[in-house]
Amino acid sequence: LRFFPKNALRSVHVHLPWPARSSRPRRAALVTPELLADAAAALEEQGELHVVTDSEELAQEACTELTRNRLFSPCLPFPFHAEGLPLSYPGGDLLQADLAVVNQGQKAKA
Image (cartoon, rainbow, N blue to C red; front, side):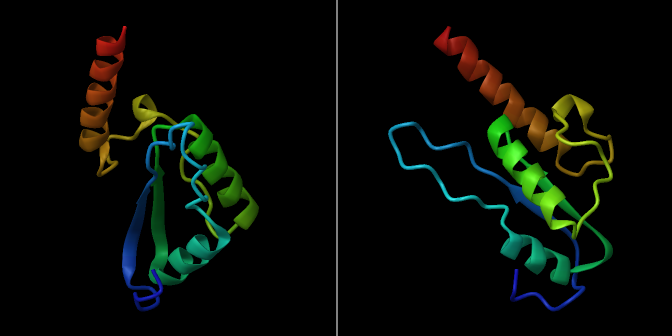
């Protein structure tokens, strides 16, 4: 995010990947103090940082770092899930499509 001028962005969306399988090394955290500082600098006043993941563990890690960092204040209680998204959330339709794919995969495994 350092290549964006200060106050240039209205929102930043961070979509965290699925956690690595147990056979692979654990991924480094993506929501770090450095990322949050860069996002805070690039966002305009009242800008929004959206963090999305399908992993409860990654959500908790991100929420912990966001709480510790204090550069952002939540506008929704976190963590929240797809069912709790406000209708105004711009990625809601994509999240619902992803959720359908995940649910279909879980049915196939059963």
